[in-house]
Length: 119
Length: 116
Image (cartoon, rainbow over the protein chains, first blue to last red):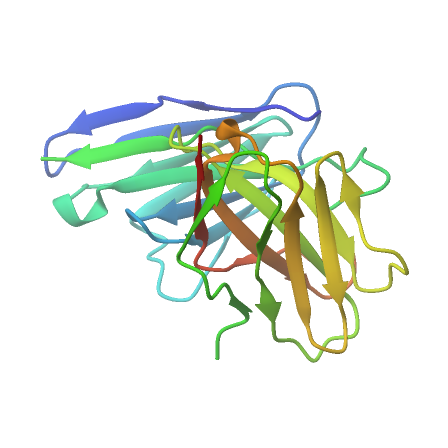
């Protein structure tokens, strides 16, 4: 099946610093990747849709200047949390669609997630 | 209005029993897709099963089956012969629009605990 990796798996940073999270599709090309945020004991909330070679599409209420997304290649998307604050502490998880999958071409395969803690 | 509703915050089931996790959805789009994902304590989201709105038969995948009742707008997940490793959070999700439409909307999840 399709494999998506994320790095780092966890990060602790000081308030005011920026943190970059990488999402990679390991065995397929992903023209579209998705970034989600999940607070403890809550569901996944879509933050943005990342399109290779173009600007990301952000969901309502998500600050695009705070959550910078770059999708420079067909296998890599990055999320940078700029000037992080304690309220940005959360579980960030990416996903990608494997267009090769004939039966379920729009199934999203998820990375293992990144737990961000801002002190 | 909630697009995806999972009414069971928690379920406790004895090992080897079958379990049904409820999911109802709300959409006016005739083309949509329904997904179930499992999230163990490690946090990763594991794809379990998919049902398209035009699929005539209920989807099955090993011990997982989806009880799709279109008129009632429900897409319950059935796990047969539950195992201890099935203990996890389970999320129902919907893609509105035809294949190629992008977004998934998730329900609040159900925490399933399998007792030995």
